[in-house]
Length: 360
Image (cartoon, rainbow, N blue to C red; front, side):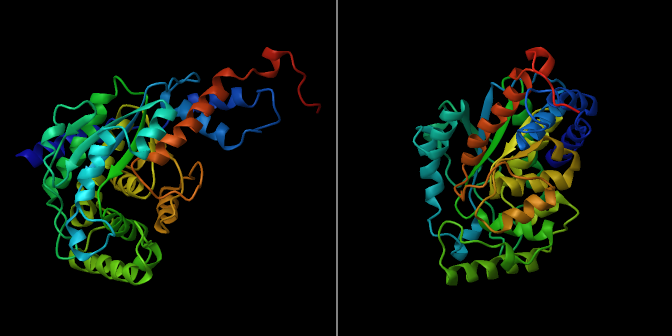
């Protein structure tokens, strides 16, 4: 019954997702073409401004209220030695984020965004954090199963994870103008690479990186683990929920749900790096219109990330050789989103400023 209710809830959410509004995009283009500068001189910032107008249905969008949502989950595949760090680092880093000492905290403070940590499926119960500000428990289970030996989770649990993300987007949308995705979970580059392999069709060896610092022999072993997972589970690339259930993670499902929910509420989402883009691909496979609400923050060092971005047909805002996760890239990219809004709303047109236009 829970899974039927969740599936019905998800379908209702999908019915609320529409493409960007073309009329507002046209109005933004008309204004931007008249700004006191050579034609489209601010390049990608102007394209971003057009997208924001289409998402928010206005040429004066307000994005002052920003939130990075860090989804947390543990992974049974760490039994296969796919990470340089022990699983309990997930717990330790969650405490570090709540205490304000992680990279995401510093980056978010600089960007003027708050940080929310959501336990989607960590092994730890986080008993001491239950009443802490900025911490929310939506735990589906205590970590996924080992995908090298079978499915990560049941289909019901996959739907529940997505629903939890949607519910958070619905809850936050009254207080948040701009969402950012983040992740925390030791071993999560492995399921993310598996998702990338299924949904891009690229060979695992071409997609797999060194994660948290694997050497070349360890990376070869990781490739073999992912190939075993795909062989054992045979996820259906046309069914995003099946892919999530077979080789994904609870935090990846939460990210997918957050994106779907944000799109249903007509809010843009700044997608962080490799793990977050795996969640975005799941959301895109479920409902392609979510693409109109995605702002891809950066290109990760993980080699599979560029193929994931190609699948989404989206360009990242920047490339600074980042590979941390947590939402750090999304937080930094929020500065660019701010700049695009200011470009659209604060720069004068030629007529407003009394500046002569280009001679014909």
